[in-house]
Image 1 (cartoon, helix red, strand yellow):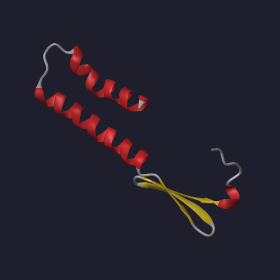
Image 2 (cartoon, rainbow, N blue to C red; image 1 turned 30 degrees about the vertical axis):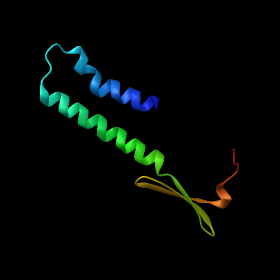
Image 3 (cartoon, rainbow, N blue to C red; image 1 turned 60 degrees about the vertical axis):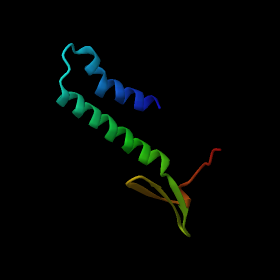
Length: 77
């Protein structure tokens, strides 16, 4: 949530400082904010863990990682 707020300040914040707001910069900044927020949400809310015979497959958005069970040293809850 803090990351989304920071991205919002960086992309949309300058619009409130400017005296004259034109439509193109506000559209571009809004698009950047929307795309970035959507990407972070996609990664965060689509995390899946798949237990295979030899490794743990972690999928989140467009990323995936294979972690061998031998490499797991600690599990926290």
